[in-house]
Image: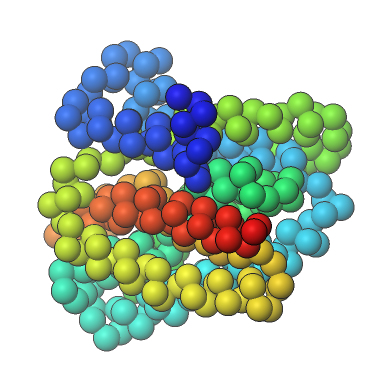
Length: 309
């Protein structure tokens, strides 16, 4: 099983995520037995897993190499943020909250601003170096629902809740301090990142309903196409032609994270004007997660194989 997962780009994350999604689709409460099993096998443990992996990856971030990471991953993620914000503002301005072709502003902004840092981490372990792995913490900030909520709030010109953003920065900073005070601790924690990757994949899959995703297949497919066309070419061009890097980062972050499916519900709970869009947006995003989780590993695998040749 382990050999099979390693043969697939990002397989350590994707295979457990798919198996978990199948369980969640046909028997969502199968593992929800008591606090321990429920926290480990269901989406109740997602936030803990995100905090843990963010802490672990931050311990491996050597401040002596921070300039390189900020130059590469930092600048790419900054462009991702800027693109998402511009596209979000334009979408709301021209199509309003109702959107177009069944894709609401809630669905579009959440999807276009999303990235899957866990999948990026899997690619970094396969094709990158320690600095690429350590940059997971930066990618993690943009993965959190807080990032999409921030983009949506700015696009819609509404108030911003900074609590979610600070909640991911705390384990990141804590891990950064500990890892740089004692590099032996960083070396001790580093192997745990690979071990936790399949468990993190299971956590992400435990919130994806495959049937609901396929019910929104047209909008989900269209959203995925927009996701690739509007962001990937710019990010890839910047990394390859401007930074003169291998392209792994821009390709690796080009997938929609499973945790993004929680954004519509979070926003709808605080803004009643979004309640009517929440369910459809969640289904469309779930389809986008499935599609990009398949296509992105194929793109990364073929490109890196071709480049290595």
